[in-house]
Image 1 (cartoon, rainbow, N blue to C red):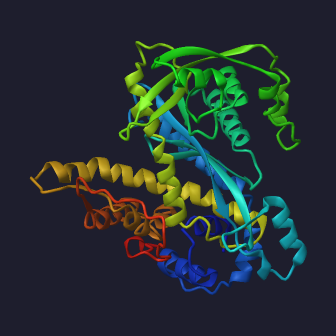
Image 2: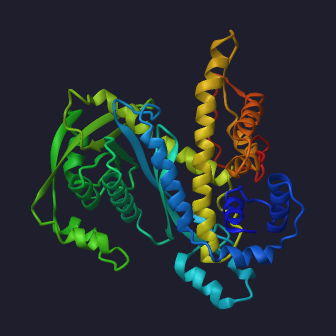
Image 3: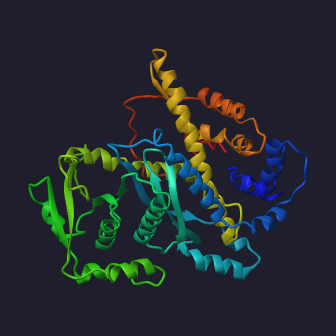
Length: 426
């Protein structure tokens, strides 16, 4: 395999055994008869930096955002979300090289599962475009990593990217309730990045007083205290946070806008934001805005349950990072194709004939039918339009109806490991 073949192979949603995937690549994609064993692949892939896939993704994203007419905005804003998740790594116990096993465990960390068995777990974080369904940036760190520190790293990279490419989108970054802290709020303010955060109880005394008041929308000042400064880490692996902490002074204040949102259950949630103009951004806007954050949860569901991002094809740190970033890149390409089909074909399908239901893409099936075909499109001299039409036709033949008023209570007891409704498409 040459360099380009190895790169494309790793983007091809590898979920079966390595040898079967290699054989399938030559048979279905290259249309060649060639013997290539998994040990040769393991050696060859060690020469490729995982940052290659990050760079490819960055170039891909740049092309998307340069076409301003096709980029979806919400009230003129690019709506972004940041969230983290745990990623289970392969069972390193099968390695003969015990030092390699220990190295991986030391890099990422271990955590006990429900049975008390120790497994290698990492922590991932993504910066996600909630309107355009694009992973802008991904980070894979140790399980002990701070999600707030990773969020700050996302923002640092975002600002660097915007300055380098002179990108002028007005961004709003949405965070869940685990993120608010004096450090993150201060950093967002300093970097001139607007934010929307959900605040859990007892995070700030000033906001608790607002929560218990009759006010629904007001502006508060959060004081920088010694205790709040102490919450900003001094650990050596977060030099950016340490440097930032040293710039903050006790008794200084940070201005925030706080808004109460009433849920369908009658429960009241409190949100904080940097949007102080109540005329341009009325309080009624923020409930819908915050719930857009759910898109990043859906993306993690796709990455874990359809792409099977935790089904790593190698046991080295390079292989793990290659799989992680290659999957993010492939996911973005698939998302772009599905969004285009949804907007152009499915919308027309729903409008041209009176139907009992509105139809949508079968997401799992749509991604599954792009295995091999997507990579074939990226090969030199490929018939791109013909392959795209084949993908489109297959997706359109398998649409799903949206049946209204279907609610299912969450099951907290036994659930099947292989549910019928979630059969693998890859």
